[in-house]
Length: 360
Ligand SMILES: Cc1cc2nc3c(=O)[nH]c(=O)nc-3n(C[C@H](O)[C@H](O)[C@H](O)COP(=O)(O)O)c2cc1C
Image (cartoon, rainbow, N blue to C red; front, side, top):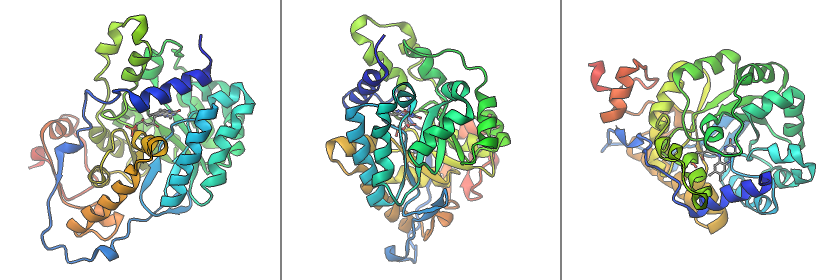
């Protein structure tokens, strides 16, 4: 079996070069804003800042967990941290499991706090690993990188399709409950690209988690990544059958908000445009997370994240919204598959100016 650092590097390489998105869309395109031709505000007056984890963000954004645990990962983390610090947005490190196995790999994560001095830095570990290392293990991981919070990722689909995957998912909810009670740091729970349902969000909010990151379907797809990793060894039908598994991001934002009305909801999974950020907030999210476009910025020198923030400001002008709070109640129409999902699941929307056909 390959070492964990090699596996992490393969994931990075495939995510950068491979065709790893789709076939599902995020369904964010099923929510359309009602354009305001008389916005009566100046772009200078648009304030995109929000508070998160006790610090102020210049835009409601988080660079999602991506990497750590190898020399290459250290370089990527340095660059991601520079982007976060420059843009004034939060950053989460990739799974810290490699440093549990080899403490010399800690440096590839610690570099993030050294550079991203003024923004929230978030530690990361899998729910399955948390159940094994317990609260003390998690505390060490967070302390080593001077994190403001820890995020626990739930990735049953990835574990199922990954050859090296861990398929025992018992005890994860209990270990999250213990972490919330005993860690003394905010706990965030995230998916990795298949979404969080209302029922799961409700269980997590009852545990008292600080935030839920939906990481819905429609962006980076781990079934595709694992299929590409195994391509030369012949294919397995599970990769094809599960390729479109998951709750699309737009539906998952509404699901999570319905199950956890007063918990911070982070929208992620396929956020690729400034308009996607705005729609996510109007659908019920507080913060928006971006992984693959930020990875491309770090490695290829694109400026995806910066450009999305610029578009977000322009979109807010076109809606007459001068703050993120006002954006959250901008009028929008929910159509097509997303409307059918919302009606079938009898989901409520936080945004009282959201129009869903079945509500009339
Ligand atoms: C190369 C790569 C590595 C990732 N590693 C982790 C990880 O270690 N821990 C985690 O919680 N999520 C991980 N993710 C998932 C992301 O944090 C995010 O939830 C998901 O990719 C959806 O965002 P996107 O569509 O913008 O890429 C990774 C994503 C990518 C692209």
